[in-house]
Length: 96
Image (cartoon, rainbow, N blue to C red; front, side, top):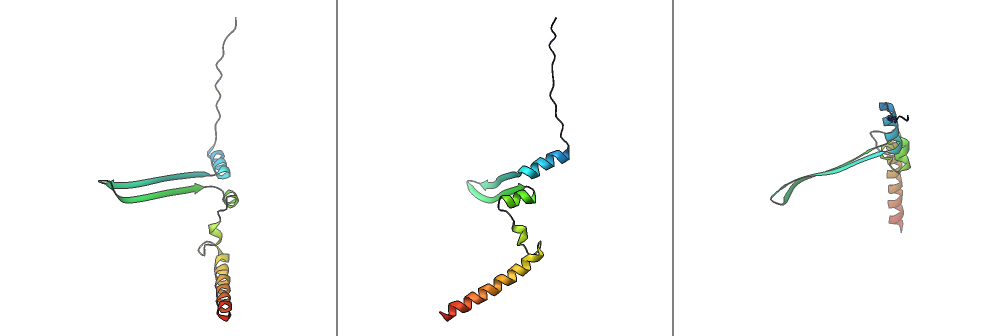
């Protein structure tokens, strides 16, 4: 007599596993909310959210925090250097 067995495949993931996968691959959430009255758009909100690790974000070319003066100590230095370069460029253009 052959008995059929039912096999259930279950895999459990901890919150850490899920977060690790999300940060490794990245997740994009995008949506638009609009409020209209009589076919006249009164309000539109566009929401774009990216969740990823710093390494993954840099891989995608996203690194705005490195140049934000509120988040990076190097940003102020870069801004000062940029301003000096602009002044030098202006002087050179005046000489021409």
